[in-house]
Length: 172
View 1 (cartoon, rainbow, N blue to C red):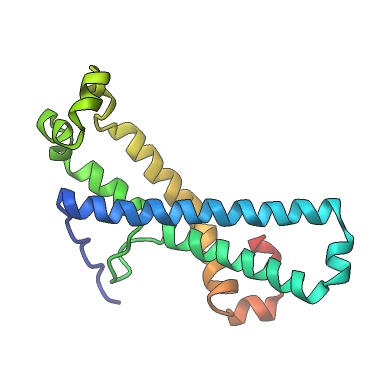
View 2: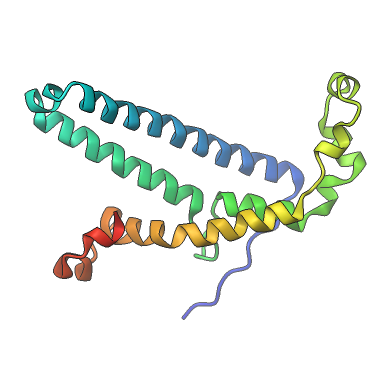
């Protein structure tokens, strides 16, 4: 078995680019979820929508569900797969492992003068919170096991054992 590749270290500028990508992925996921939930709510109000155009809405709902699983998988993908991923866990690990991002000088450099003047206590708001970071990383670790299993066994691949056993309900 291949050994895990150490994650690439990022400087602050690289981190900001990775963080922007992850933030954009999260925003897209939220938008897609809002559309998906809205469509399901409309089905509840107007049941004839699904009856009049069953093939279209069946395909639409399945595509949206798959899309959400893929977006979630991208955001929560485990590290150490041999490819450097832009994930939420990577962002949190970079923050935890780079206290130099949180020095007074580093924080001040990121904040505009107008912001600092309008918010005199702003330095304290931008401090690293290691307890929160570690709690968030633990939540990600606990949450992603079922998601990754679902993505690999049902959405991204058709797992032979899942199909033959008929145990698809384990993922819902």
